[in-house]
Image 1: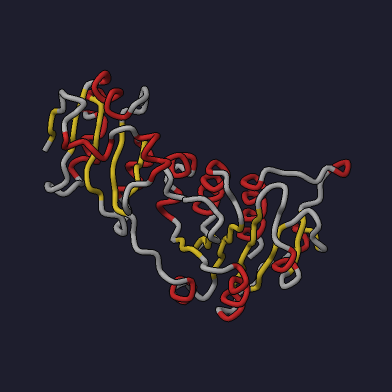
Image 2: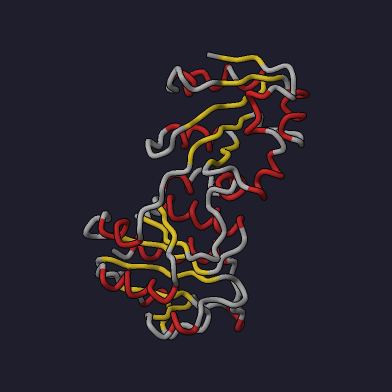
Length: 265
């Protein structure tokens, strides 16, 4: 059912008001999905409950097939471009937004136990850049990683920009938070994962690494990298570069490493 919205102050569209400000303040266990590609990915994921959609008038027809897949209980609000821009607080060129509930995150142990016998896990430590987090999730989805683990310092993968940069990958790959980094390696080892830490100071070249039956790839923030106490407990690996250059964007690095690990099985 399409519901026309002509007043930007309509209380029914309160979750969409001042989107950028809400990005910073939080949405009480909800998140925003933006754009057609992300919306279509979201609607295919059974673990997310979609609460409502807000569309510009010109996007309704092109989404008719997706809208037919929605439960009749999910309201679809439709507004013209001027009203929609006033609601969200900036020109929303994509004209497509959705509000969905965040799932309850499983424990690290439960998530690892649910994975198949052969599994690849990506671990992010201290990544505070939403573009990098979104890019890594995009690569994880593209190369078939089974799960992603995040430490407490890594930013929210369901932040609107991170989801958008991931092209919906953050909605596809299961993830959870690790309560303490000192227990991270132990949890992986107890679940029979070989832990590989990617770093410019790694003692082995990535090209020489043959992935184990269960492999975990650790990625740290650009600049500080992975904490030394994690590095000493893992197999450290580097990507050799030309002319002594030792810096790659961490999302780019993740794509190179995941391609090698999935193609070397």
